[in-house]
Length: 114
Length: 116
Image 1 (cartoon, helix red, strand yellow):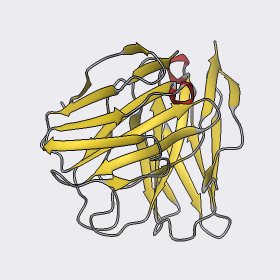
Image 2: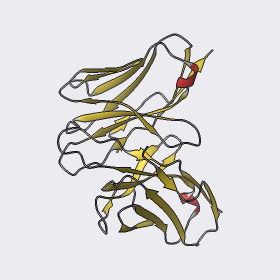
Image 3: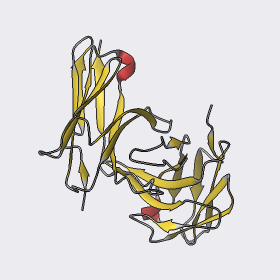
Image 4: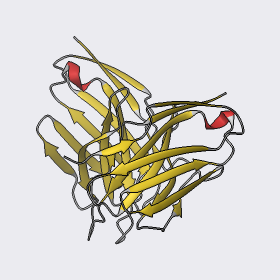
């Protein structure tokens, strides 16, 4: 049972345009969400996160939006750059003290076209 | 800089062999994790540990065991490797966050294991 879903396995975007990556979840207990980025032959690295008490969090070119009623979050990258080409994973967490377990989605491969 | 080091980048093993994957972190993190990454399936949690000698099953623990004898080291053991355990294995570590939210999980570069 996939509790965190990324329905687009791949996405191609022109350099300079906006990239929008989507993620849906089914477990209403999730209250903290993260995005990780992964290059080939490297481990995932943290990108940005959002708490369920917010609906938007911004960090430079990256913005994450959370729609709790729809159980949906999205990552916006603007403007997209060639170095953004990577696999992006969303992850979700239930914030009990001592629980650091993350549930990851299946990933979306983003390709930025120069 | 946080460093999570996995002992091997590539491993080739035979069916039935006992396989050890080692992970070491240098940031005194309480929590350590083992994931496998497969195409179309994302990252799936195998086992995790929140303290020395403590372990918890993740989502896919079957066929695996773990060992955490020291805080900085977390080992994944395949008792009898099978071809369906061919995968990319990723280790991660993190502090425990005191409230709502999450400390970042830091990942190693991964071990690509092929079981023939």
